[in-house]
Length: 459
Image (cartoon, rainbow, N blue to C red):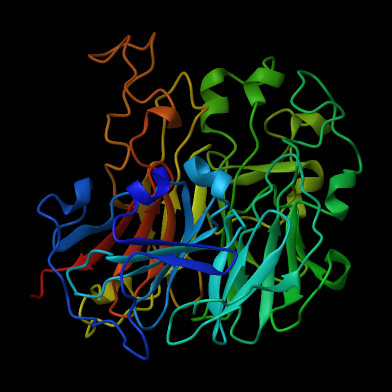
């Protein structure tokens, strides 16, 4: 099988059935958390001075999505299928049994391709596009024969933005993203000049975050409650334990120039609308589809589908604003609030404590400007739970090719575009997790590479 060739020293577990070609660690044997050496080239990515990285695994053979690390050091990666979709492998379990930083015990299990994953109260939670389920953890691993328990079931498979990213609060509230299967709730989706449906009927079931009980089995959509609304799609979703608040990053809408060329230039459409970093309180309304955020004007403006002209606010004046905004179409797909201690084996410097790391998956529709994203950013946070400074590029170089100027632009790269879109990227950062030693883990959605970033200056 091609999958087995891609996963050296590997195991595949399908719907709880374990197939192994090597002895497995048994009993309570936590993995050493001592610091391994970075790769000589830092796994091919560029980091700030004092940091190093290694590739935990070069390729999982499928599109890796979100990731979580157990306090024993076991890594779990949610997969979206990709090359092994026919085998329906939904989760990969990775362990480093000889402390060289490389995963040498790799298992795949579950038949639920999807995005969301998390650990709570002794269980591994994960999602497909139509459900949320959990597996009981045994000594930090999923034991042979463990079957998934259904937490939320029977969700409709929508035609777009179907990924059910999730977050869990310490008191057992399960938050699930329900992206809108639409660009701007038009009468005819993405059609030039088509007006928006008013009121937008999708808001009843989509474009928001729903809350469920993480401890209750077999819940349906009706058993949950809409926690916040007006969010087109939030693949990045995280509970911040420092201030006990939910955060999300929104994927903004497309086609301002394509559908409303009389109001917007192609350059404006490449930069707008902003990708929004949201502090999500219960009952909040962030305005989609009626509104979008413009970081040049620092305000929510009325969408053209609802009578806007690019500057007017109308009904958007009272909508919730983001706590930070980024250029359009960068696709923020995960966020992590760093809580590592400087005393840990690979703990980051104190300035990173409680700040946010953000994975930008990368754009596809910023022409005629160069593509953007494809990096991991860091945002410092203050005691008020809001950014205390500008974002910084923390890890970059994933794409492997320059993000050059588009054809028709002036300059030395005119007529060339090495990174025309996501299909040209060698890697795209997707998910984030913090290890018990303070390391930062990053997944890649192209090959399924898993990176581990460590602070090495103090060694």
